[in-house]
Length: 112
Image 1: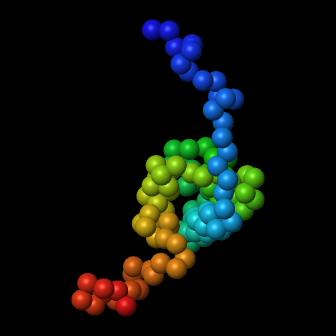
Image 2 (image 1 turned 90 degrees about the vertical axis):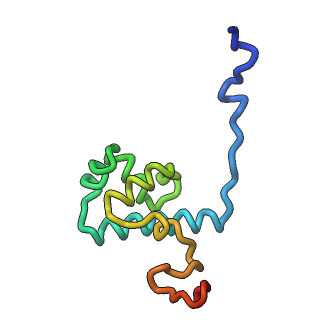
Image 3 (image 1 turned 90 degrees about the horizontal axis):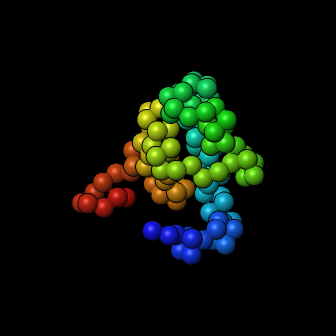
Protein backbone atom coordinates (compact mmCIF):
# COMPACT_ATOMS: atom_id res chain seq x y z
CA UNK A 1 0.00 0.00 0.00
CA UNK A 2 1.30 3.44 -0.90
CA UNK A 3 1.53 5.75 2.12
CA UNK A 4 3.07 8.83 0.53
CA UNK A 5 -0.08 10.92 0.40
CA UNK A 6 -1.29 9.74 3.80
CA UNK A 7 1.71 10.18 6.13
CA UNK A 8 2.48 13.79 7.00
CA UNK A 9 6.00 15.00 7.55
CA UNK A 10 6.97 15.78 11.12
CA UNK A 11 7.38 19.44 10.27
CA UNK A 12 3.74 19.65 9.16
CA UNK A 13 2.41 18.02 12.33
CA UNK A 14 4.39 19.92 14.95
CA UNK A 15 2.22 21.86 17.33
CA UNK A 16 3.64 23.05 20.60
CA UNK A 17 1.57 22.59 23.73
CA UNK A 18 1.92 25.67 25.87
CA UNK A 19 2.62 24.83 29.49
CA UNK A 20 0.92 27.04 32.04
CA UNK A 21 2.72 28.52 35.04
CA UNK A 22 0.72 26.18 37.30
CA UNK A 23 1.82 23.16 35.25
CA UNK A 24 5.44 24.34 35.33
CA UNK A 25 5.26 24.67 39.12
CA UNK A 26 3.79 21.16 39.41
CA UNK A 27 6.51 19.66 37.20
CA UNK A 28 9.15 21.47 39.28
CA UNK A 29 7.62 19.96 42.43
CA UNK A 30 7.75 16.43 40.95
CA UNK A 31 11.39 16.94 39.91
CA UNK A 32 12.18 18.21 43.42
CA UNK A 33 10.55 15.12 44.96
CA UNK A 34 12.54 12.89 42.61
CA UNK A 35 15.78 14.58 43.63
CA UNK A 36 14.97 14.56 47.36
CA UNK A 37 13.79 10.95 47.55
CA UNK A 38 16.90 9.74 45.75
CA UNK A 39 19.09 11.61 48.24
CA UNK A 40 17.07 10.26 51.19
CA UNK A 41 17.68 6.71 49.97
CA UNK A 42 21.40 7.54 49.71
CA UNK A 43 21.54 6.34 46.13
CA UNK A 44 23.66 8.06 43.50
CA UNK A 45 22.21 9.16 40.19
CA UNK A 46 24.25 6.38 38.59
CA UNK A 47 22.74 3.73 40.88
CA UNK A 48 19.18 4.89 40.23
CA UNK A 49 19.79 5.06 36.48
CA UNK A 50 21.19 1.54 36.58
CA UNK A 51 18.16 0.24 38.49
CA UNK A 52 15.87 1.97 35.98
CA UNK A 53 17.92 0.65 33.04
CA UNK A 54 18.40 4.11 31.53
CA UNK A 55 21.46 6.28 30.90
CA UNK A 56 22.78 8.51 33.67
CA UNK A 57 22.28 11.57 31.44
CA UNK A 58 18.64 10.69 30.91
CA UNK A 59 18.17 10.30 34.67
CA UNK A 60 19.90 13.61 35.33
CA UNK A 61 17.28 15.28 33.18
CA UNK A 62 14.60 13.97 35.59
CA UNK A 63 16.19 15.99 38.39
CA UNK A 64 17.18 19.06 36.37
CA UNK A 65 16.13 22.33 37.98
CA UNK A 66 16.53 24.22 34.73
CA UNK A 67 13.36 23.63 32.65
CA UNK A 68 15.43 23.77 29.45
CA UNK A 69 17.35 20.69 30.61
CA UNK A 70 14.44 18.92 32.24
CA UNK A 71 11.75 17.02 30.45
CA UNK A 72 8.54 15.20 31.17
CA UNK A 73 9.36 11.57 31.92
CA UNK A 74 6.93 8.91 30.76
CA UNK A 75 4.66 7.11 33.18
CA UNK A 76 6.76 3.96 32.73
CA UNK A 77 9.90 5.90 33.68
CA UNK A 78 8.18 7.31 36.76
CA UNK A 79 7.05 3.82 37.77
CA UNK A 80 10.59 2.51 37.29
CA UNK A 81 11.94 5.37 39.41
CA UNK A 82 9.45 4.67 42.21
CA UNK A 83 10.39 1.00 42.20
CA UNK A 84 14.10 1.87 42.23
CA UNK A 85 13.83 4.07 45.33
CA UNK A 86 10.96 2.25 47.03
CA UNK A 87 8.20 4.87 47.01
CA UNK A 88 4.58 4.94 45.83
CA UNK A 89 3.85 6.80 42.62
CA UNK A 90 0.77 8.33 44.24
CA UNK A 91 3.05 10.19 46.65
CA UNK A 92 5.37 11.34 43.89
CA UNK A 93 2.55 12.73 41.73
CA UNK A 94 0.37 14.10 44.55
CA UNK A 95 -0.48 17.77 44.11
CA UNK A 96 0.55 20.06 46.97
CA UNK A 97 -2.99 20.65 48.21
CA UNK A 98 -3.71 16.89 48.37
CA UNK A 99 -3.41 15.49 51.92
CA UNK A 100 -0.75 12.87 52.49
CA UNK A 101 -2.56 9.50 52.61
CA UNK A 102 -0.30 8.34 55.44
CA UNK A 103 -1.29 11.22 57.73
CA UNK A 104 -4.97 11.64 56.92
CA UNK A 105 -7.50 10.03 59.22
CA UNK A 106 -10.49 8.19 57.76
CA UNK A 107 -13.79 8.79 59.49
CA UNK A 108 -16.95 7.29 58.11
CA UNK A 109 -15.52 7.00 54.61
CA UNK A 110 -14.41 10.64 54.64
CA UNK A 111 -11.00 12.06 55.33
CA UNK A 112 -10.69 14.76 57.91
